[in-house]
Structure formats: structure tokens, C-alpha cells
Length: 484
Ligand code: HEM
Ligand SMILES: *[C@@H]1O[C@H](CO)[C@@H](O)[C@H](O)[C@H]1NC(C)=O
Ligand SMILES: *[C@@H]1O[C@H](CO)[C@@H](O)[C@H](O)[C@H]1NC(C)=O
Ligand SMILES: *[C@@H]1O[C@H](CO)[C@@H](O)[C@H](O)[C@H]1NC(C)=O
Ligand SMILES: *[C@@H]1O[C@H](CO)[C@@H](O)[C@H](O)[C@H]1NC(C)=O
Image (cartoon, rainbow, N blue to C red):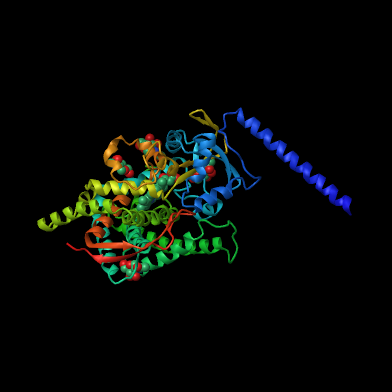
């Protein structure tokens, strides 16, 4: 018997040796090819475990920091079963985001691609992405929309705040989600508080649970349940889109679009002579997929702003002063707020920038290279993935003094001098977030009414960074009326 074991042991040693040799050879070859330095870690799993562990820690950038100090700002690693080049360099990130020549396409884990569908704006590439991006961006950024939606945002915020005094404690993360979901659904498809809204909310929550899960699809699995929820969502949204199409055909009013459904229904830009509209299934799918980047991000920035302000009484005091001034000014003149009133408070805007910098709700974007590219002397080979890390840039001492400290005043000191490549919470270039201005407006309105209505004390709570940014306890706070 023993010779069998000895034989097996020998084989194992030989196989191990060969694998080792192969790896060394590969690394030798890559060393001279311009591929950034770095290690591939274990066979198959690579450095995934270390990556996830640092995601769970209180310093999610530690994975990047460690490798940056060993190999430089751009390095090679191996995550989720494939080789990846990680960039913590803002110039390299910029080139990836600009994406001249359409070399990079979005890359997501398999569970995400399954749930998104092929024609989602998040996965599209080329002219179709540009078309939908321009349509949605043009609508969301228009001053007319901001003027109109300001009243709706105010109403949602005030209604929610009015219920806070009966709640002990108030879970900020939950409440802000309620506010922003209402706004989002209104902007996308003009649905106000109703049975439809509740249905959308319930099914959407079921749907996104599957975004980060094992990509296994059969009855009972997480992915299966999420895909089922998506079917129900699609059915409902498709109904709304059809109704709107009928209504649209009855009028020849070509004024401002009411919502994203309108924008997509009306568009005929690509084929002008045949008057070809976007297919209804395409529109319904994209409306649902546009909820993904819009749904979780805005309430988390609001929640983290409350968290950072609770820990920084000096900044909170300054914020209250600035907003009370606007409030009393408005009370005296009996004027309604215009959207520009909210956006014109400089310290409030600095608080929002500082929150976005530290929160890193979307901490990186993932891309795949369609051909060999060289950026700043680093080679990204065809077929490899690139992870452009925003959080590493936002938390880099070279870019921000005391990066882990919440300091809204830093935006005053440097002001416009802050290199815009070093601040990319909304991405940039070809896929710059079309919801950027709407998000900032929502957050500004929320902060204004919150700090001019209540004072609060926050309970101990921690920020979790993996798989997405969340508060461990949903940030419970106890509120008190404002003492004048
Ligand atoms: C504070 C809140 C938000 C943050 C931090 C944020 C961040 C981002 C980032 C970083 C990207 C780029 C992704 C990439 O390059 O692959 C993006 C894209 C996108 N965002 Fe936002 N976003 C926010 C709010 C919103 C809202 C409210 C909406 C919708 C109303 C929205 C809709 C989109 C869409 C449709 C895209 C895809 C654009 C494209 O690929 O062409 N986002 N967002
Ligand atoms: C680009 O998108 C289209 C669908 O819009 C898809 O068929 C094609 O495979 C994509 N190209 C790549 C390289 O993924
Ligand atoms: C969300 O808001 C609606 C009213 O707009 C309210 O009926 C509902 O109870 C709220 N949900 C939570 C969780 O606060
Ligand atoms: C749009 O119209 C212009 C001029 O009328 C024509 O040259 C062009 O080919 C048309 N584009 C499409 C996609 O049909
Ligand atoms: C805050 O961030 C926005 C981009 O989101 C930028 O346009 C603005 O200049 C920043 N504020 C300051 C004071 O730098």
C-alpha cells in the first residue's frame, strides 16, 4: 500500500513543481512585456479572498494600498477567476473613462450580466449606448426638469420628515430610501404614491438581491427568484409604456418630456427618414435597469452625510447656520424655493462633495479591453480587465491632506484648484453619470430641510463597505425639535 501513497505524493510534488515553473515562466515573460507588476496569487481564486477581506474591513482601500506600495500605482492581480489590472492612478483612470476609440467595454460579474439583459444601458457599447446616454442625460440635466421636480422632492422630503418625530429611533438609511425611490420612479415613469409604486418597490427589492450572488439559475436559487421578480417588473412597466404610447399618439404636443419613458418613446433620432422608434421591450427593460444606479446611491450619500455630520459638530454647526439663513430669508419674502436656491449654498455643496469623496458609493468601475492598449507606459493586453479604482484616488494622501478626515473646508481652500481627475464619484467621460445633477439637488434639498427642522443624536453605527456601502444598523438617530 505504501508505495501507492508514495507514488501519489511524488506525482503531487511533480505537478506542483510544474505549476510553479509555469507560473514563474509566465511572470518572467510578463516582466519584460510592459504588463504592470503584481502577483496572481493562488491558482484560480487568485487574490480574491484578500480583496474581499479588505472590502469587509473598516479600510476597504487597504488591498489597493498594500499593492500600490509594492508595485506602483498600476498593478496586476487576479480576481474572480481572471487576470485584472488595477489602476489607482487618476491619469490612467481618466483614459479608461474617456474611452476614445471604444476600446473598453463594461465588465460585470456573471450574476449581474444575467440580471441586466443584453440591451441595458449599463452593458451596451458603441452608438446605442451613446444614443440612450445622450437622451437620458439631456432630460435629467435640463433646467426644466429640475425646476419641476424640486417641488416633488420637497414634498417627499417634508412628508417623510413629518413622520420622524413619531419614530424612536429613526432609521436614516431606510427613510432616505423611501424618499429617493419615490423621486426616481416619478422621474422615470411619472408614477406617484400608489399601489403601483408599492408593487414596484417590493419587486425591485426582490430583483436587486440577486445582483451579487452565485450565478446559478434553477428554481429556489437567489438568481432564479430575482429573474422572476424582473419578469413581474417588466410586465408592469411594459403596461405603463404601452399606455403612454397610446396617449402620446393622441396628442401632437411635442413640449418637454414628462419623464424618461416619454423621452425614449419620442426618440427617432437614429433613423430619421423611416421614423423608427425604439422597441417597447427595449424601453421597458432600460427603465428598470436605470433604477439600478439610481436607487441605492442617493439615499446612501444622504445617510453618510448624516453620519459624517453627527461625528463632526463643527461642520454641522456651519451647515445649520448657512441653511437657517436661507430658510429665514425665504420665510420673510414668502417665496417658494427655486432649485437654484438649494444649489447656491457653498458650504452645503462642500459638505456634499466631501461626503461623496469619502463615501465612495461606487468605488470603482470595471472594464474589459477589446485590444492591446498602452497607457502611461503600462500595457493592458487584449481581453484583460481593468479596475479603475476611484476610492484609492479619493483616499490618497498625495491628493487630499488627511484623507480619512471629514473636512468640508478643504473644498474652500483648494476650490477649483482640485484636479477634477482626482474627484470622480460620478465617473467620467463616455459614461459620466447622467443623474449627477439630479442627485446633488435631491441631497441638497434633503439636507436643507433636515438641518432646519430637527436636531439629532446618532447612535453608534459602522459603515460596511462590502459588497456595497451600507450602515450596519441602518443608522438609528433620535431626533429633537430645533431650538431656535
Ligand atoms: C449619488 C448618487 C449617484 C452616484 C454616486 C452615481 C455614480 C455613477 C457612476 C460612477 C457611474 C458610471 C458607471 C460606469 O462608468 O460604468 C454612473 C452611471 C450611471 N448613472 Fe449614476 N450615480 C448616482 C445617481 C444616479 C441617479 C439618481 C440616476 C438616475 C436617475 C443615475 C443613473 C445612471 C445611469 C443611467 C448610468 C449609466 C450611464 C452610461 O453607462 O451611459 N445615477 N453613476
Ligand atoms: C456591443 O453591444 C452589442 C449589443 O448592443 C453586442 O451585441 C456586442 O456583442 C457588444 N460588443 C462586445 C464586444 O461585447
Ligand atoms: C414610505 O413612505 C410612504 C408614504 O410616502 C409611507 O406610507 C411608508 O410607510 C413609508 N415607508 C417606510 C418604510 O417608512
Ligand atoms: C438622416 O437624414 C440625412 C439627410 O436627410 C441623411 O443623409 C441620413 O442618411 C439620414 N440618416 C439615417 C440614419 O437614415
Ligand atoms: C464639487 O464637485 C462638483 C462635481 O461633482 C464640482 O463641479 C465642484 O467644482 C466641486 N466643488 C468644489 C468647491 O470644488
